[in-house]
Structure formats: structure tokens, C-alpha cells
Length: 236
Ligand SMILES: [Zn+2]
Image (tube, rainbow, N blue to C red; front, top):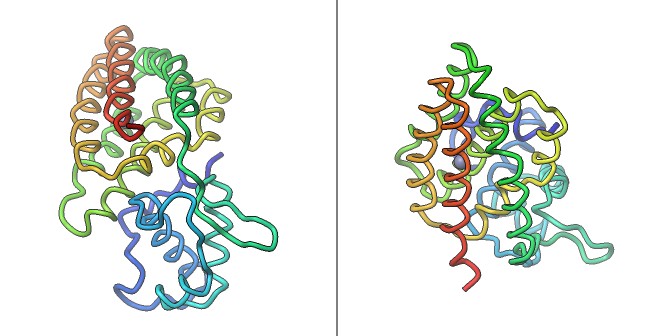
């Protein structure tokens, strides 16, 4: 599965350069990853632009090794492209056609999954979903860019958990493999994207909590359609 979706320590992640120095190599690579991920999501590193290991190492004040490790991980997530003899660059923005295809795929699979999830909802599963949704809502203050990239990750996690509860592992893997949320959130850096999504998640959670399959299906469909409409202006 997607290692990102399993990363729980989101709220512990700090922007590079802040806080105490972490001695362990893994910690440095993790911090480098978070910092570069944030820059990619908020378009501080523009889609398609070159990424220089040297520059990043200087900027984040770490050696090249954790930078390379972070870039390798981002390559696996489709956010970074490595070209022979040229090096790394940020993945190009997804094309309109790909965007439509991704949303078609989501609309085919996710409302149905939400319906199934509602039908098997119990206290424990609901608590898990509320926890993920709550982490998104609680993220106030701090760096807006960092908040935005954190929201993208949490949104991916929230949708993934619903698919997990729905119980079809292949559907879950198919959607996780697309890293849809990362590509979608990178289209536009705007607070409206997150505020409206939070309201829709509330409606979805209420339907899931009530065990009403049809209502959950409808809420998920509306959420995905509205998400698409919010991001469409990125192609104007
Ligand atoms: Zn969402």
C-alpha cells in the first residue's frame, strides 16, 4: 500500500530548520521529504521545473543523502520525475484529460464504497474516521503552505480509510496507486479548496454515522463533484 497513507505522524512533522536537530538519518530524510512535499503541493516548486539536489541541500541545511532519499520517495508518488543524465524535476501538472479521467474513476468507485462503508459502520470505525477528519479541521495557524499540503495528505487518508472500511482491497489499491489527491491539490493553492471540503466531509461523516447507505453514497458523490468543480478553473 501507499506508505504515505500509513504515515500517522503528520502533526509531528515540522518544517525543516525548525526545532531540535534530529540526529538519526531517517529523521533527516523524513524532514527533507516533508519540506519538499510541502513546496511541491503549494507550487513553490513549480510543476515541470528542475529540482537541484545541491540547492535543496543548502536550503534545508542537510547533506545530499536525505535529499536524494526524499526525492526517490516523491518519485514513487509521481510528484517528482527523474531523467537520465538530467536529474530531478517536479512532475508536470496533470492535463485536463487526465483530470477528467481521475474524477470519472473516483465517481465510479467512491460513492459505492461510501455506501458499503455506511452499512458496516460501527463505533470503532466511526471514531477512526472522525479522528482523521478532526485532524484536518484542527489545523489552524502556522504556515499556510504547510497547512495546505497537510490537508492534501489528510484528505487522501480520509478517503482511503472509507475505502478500507468498504472492504474491497483492489478498489482501495487502485485509487491509492493514482495518488489522486496529490495531483489534484497541486492544481491550485487556495484556502477555499480546503474550507468547502471540510463542510462536505461533515455531511459525509453524518451520513456514515447514521448507517444510511444511500445518504452516504449521495454525500460522497456530491463531495467529489464539487471538488472537481472547485478545481476546474485551474485549466482556464
Ligand atoms: Zn475529501
